[in-house]
Image (cartoon, rainbow, N blue to C red):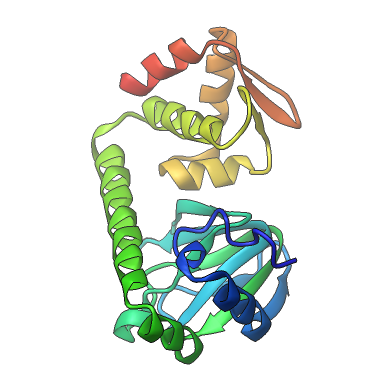
Length: 221
């Protein structure tokens, strides 16, 4: 199980192999049902998560009560909770978008490794900076990009996470709407508008991109 387990991670792969094996032995194993929350926005939650299987979503709740999906955490990736570093409340929630299995480490455990390998802290700094830049792009897109462009951008992003131009529909219209700050009805209309324009084909199981250039142009509108 330990062979190459951390290959896709930004941080854990930089620890020596013998330390990676010890980390796995010290981890808390947890299975999470679809829709179950690991932590809620406003909790103080000093943990690191490694996703063995499934899908997690980082979701922010607005003052009006609407949820907005900031990004997904996919199988083989890790998540470093903000509370580890500042002891403050979590700025968003971590929820399972499908049945998932995770490894968890608390702050005390993970800090032992960071004290032994201070260079890894630079990798964490880079990861958190990347998250901040990504958040900036999301905010910019929500403020200045039309809904059709936001949907096109999301579909293009999903394409980069798959082989070929077929996107598995492991999300609902509500999920899409939350991600692009729109309504399920608007997302549904746009998907079928894109289909009528020959840009994509929507089925119950997948979305197939048939004209990638047209979708990229829709992203620029």
